[in-house]
Image (cartoon, rainbow, N blue to C red; front, side, top):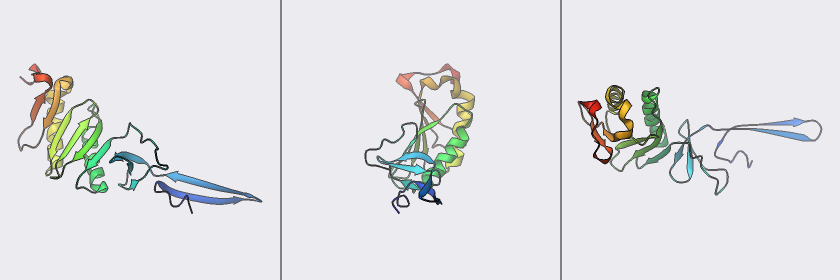
Length: 167
């Protein structure tokens, strides 16, 4: 019963080995992200708590902080962004949704991406196109990319740097 009550179990199997042994098998849910300050999010969008109080959340998992979205919606946005940037040396480290429902992504290399709340697929596609053609070789100079525009993106450079790659 105690094993069944753990929030992170995917399946449990119990078998008896004659005469006096019981084997208990446990499969954990696959963890995809940190959810808030003290929970995990599974790949299916389920919130699970650490097995014991004080357990450390793995640092390598991306952090999700969502004001309005459900865990399932957050996983959908994460999958959308992750799939679009796959193969472009970008890895999502943080996904944030503010109280207005606007999404922001932080990549492991420090580049931030502002997506807004609507047309996420189009905006991510626009970002990838600009990143691939103009920003890939100058990421160390890029602080933020604002993709909330209909026909382009705005780039904020680190420490006022302006790249000749965009000329």
